[in-house]
Length: 92
Length: 243
Image 1 (cartoon, each protein chain N blue to C red):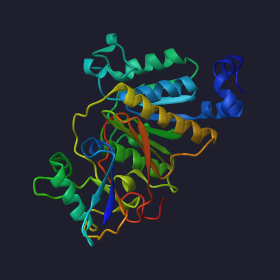
Image 2 (image 1 turned 120 degrees about the vertical axis):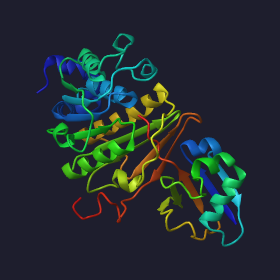
Image 3 (image 1 turned 60 degrees about the horizontal axis):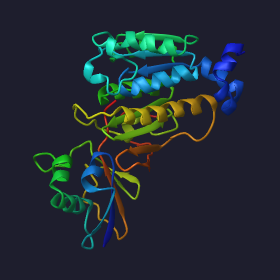
């Protein structure tokens, strides 16, 4: 199935603005993130800690609606879903 | 009533929102948290626009490495308190408004006192722990918080109206780790200007605010995007029914 990934802030510099991924049916948010990490080691380093856990401040949205990374990573994706991913900017 | 000098000084923006709008700006008391990259742009434009009272707070002294972006401060200010040079720059731009510039570290202990009498809060901080303090104070006082943050070519901004929009902790539940971020003056210019525009719109009642919308500026690609936000019913800061 076709999933669109939108990256913002520093993740955009690694992943590009938009990226289309083709995943197996019933793939989850977690599968998608693993796919991105495998394709882009810099993304893996930026988004995951040393134990392979998604950094807790990373924000995820599916179809423009916030999901909770502590609960929703196993959520199955649907054909045509859009995942947005970004870290908060903190500088001033 | 505006004086003749005020009518002349603000004539180009009175065309936008009338003398009534200008009087509203002059009656507004602003708290600006930080006199760094964002704080420079925010305070200079707010002073020039005639926000009547500006209280700007920063605990640091000016360093050479600040000068690529912190346009409140000049070369001769290196080593001086940022609040001191901020005061001089702001009163230099507009001597007709009231400026208070304080050398203080914003903390849980002093934030109530610092915000005394202020109608709106401008977020010009460089870290999330103090941003969360500003957010909580905005919720408690039911006054708006105009959020902005930058890193390198990237920036983000949103407008938080207590009781109406997502709060900062709804949008960003957890803080990223503290780090020395890359910073470009022009990115501060874009984001700080958006924050001031939001404040002007809020006070004069013009336009559509960045309510429940997180705006992203991507300077590298030259594009703006936005993401819808919503209140988090489990938010640790605003979900107890009080706000």
